[in-house]
Length: 296
Image (tube, rainbow, N blue to C red; front, side):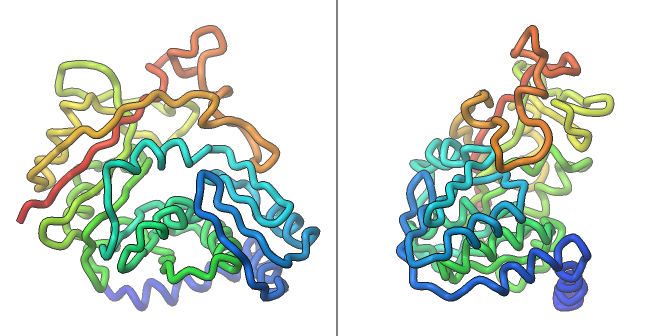
């Protein structure tokens, strides 16, 4: 696969009629020297035009990942992504490593990873809106993060291999999860690791829930495995080590409606009379975080 051909084709996405005005808004931003604090909220302070910052940020809605603070503008994203990041933080060390984030959204996690001083940070996400949100934040941060409008299917053809690959909240969107896990495996260098986050259901059997049409009102959820079934998928994909790091239940503190999104959020996805179930009657979302190691 010639990735340069793919890149050139996807550059045209930035000219789509719903994206071009957003890119124009970014072009009108003035250069400024800012101080960046990489905490639970990515905070950017400097001599910024407060109204233009707010108006541009609003134009770029919906904001799924965050939060961010740019001058006076607090972008209270749908997800408090700091909760997931802090849960995982003690399980990795990225210093001097080549790191990829698959399905990186607007780059919140990558901005947080900068404090680890990785050798290289590359985000993969084929969304021109999220790429534009990233460019908006990076206009002030001025990081060396590389954002590719590519998907996991391009990872094995990428120009370099990675020491650590993050894949958070992507696997359940794939109709062939084992094939995707193989793509992650091929993107790793020797002795590389994947930090994976996906939905799971309780159970000791090696089985998976196959939603009829949607799960938590999300139509492109194909399989929700037990942890044992997930382990089998990962071993079949070639990984040598499967290590459960954490499990968590998604709640309304972590995912909720704010003024910075459009449409529904978690409270609309769960049974109003029983929060342990989705509106479809399935078990409510739980997440398992695992480390996969390519030990060869």
